Length: 293
Ligand SMILES: [Zn+2]
Image (cartoon, rainbow, N blue to C red; front, side, top):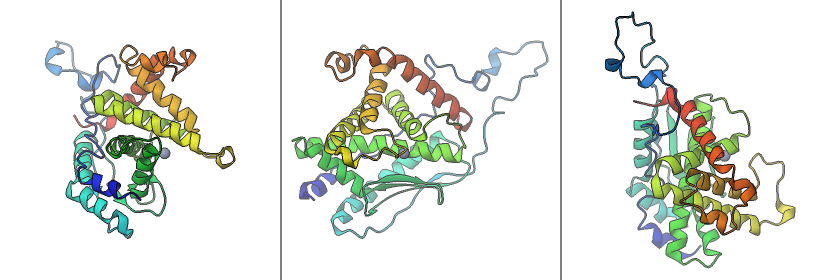
């Protein structure tokens, strides 16, 4: 553990999010449920109004994202933990999420030392856990490419934001019982990419780039014999290309260098705008009944 990792945490301010105001539905170019947002004042006529009430499809709000503070046992994470709590990073994220989303039950958000490099949603106690080991892992991963401490720290923060929203996606899939016709891990990646790229501006773009970088570096560091082909996650190489495809598809003109520099093959790139739009439309529609107005 490099001491700088701890020191750099002192400047932590936006580790998790300027999360998602993905409640306030950016509707440009997206066809979402029309009835819910019709302004009645513009639609009155002499005809009897047989339309359903505007919020007919909305679900009951019976829960919140709640922050749980646990004591860390690993000495080298104590200062990081103190700082995360002092900066109220999870509280900030939960407030944003609570302003955005209706929940059928409480969902707990926590950071802790897990004795493993991980982040996960646990359906058993409805909780999202971000492990300090994962943050350290990302920091070391970016440092391994020769990045200076400050750069590695910044990229770690960005990558953590991608992962946090991936875990939130798992929580929403479970709590809302969302129909996911395909691989849930991929769906969670697409949800995180959608929120980051559609709702969080440059900060969100950085998060998806950082995740792509981490996938690329990790793939090179993983020996073929260590690959777990039975794992439900896509291969790191696939997650790398999918992340780049989402970024490129979100704005091909702005991100054309991803293709011109050879990171994303042209054969894939031509389909990325459609792929991105499909992911956005899918998630907008899935979350629509659960958004607060
Ligand atoms: Zn996952």
